[in-house]
Length: 166
Image 1: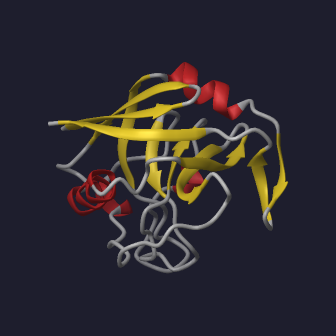
Image 2 (image 1 turned 90 degrees about the vertical axis):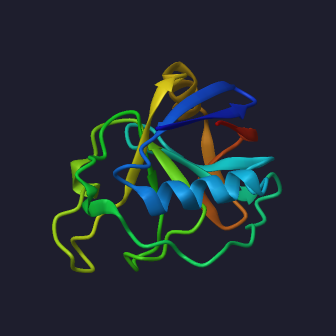
């Protein structure tokens, strides 16, 4: 297990990454973290009762460049339950790059069901161990449309940096 802290302008969120069950996903996340990719990015999609998503846009809503996608490890037995962190992706099951989300409720419909485009699900790779109160405060921010995106916090929720505890 590897622990990381997301230092945000709303407080710290401590996350335990599960490198045993999601080795490629954790290595991918840590690579972005070490490169400073997540520094000064925003939670750009917040949907109460569902999830908070970040890791892809700077404070001006400009999308950051990414590395090649990582293989979807949603078939690892980990579930999209409250407080877990998972990889965001497009409709292509193997398209996850840097963006991630934290589940704020149990989202079983996001879990792996089969190795098909519709059944792959979203790869969980860790869980919040401290700072769920911060996650809840982010979940409650007012959102609207910004730069062609929906559900964007009207006041920036910034990830100042990610600290890896090695």
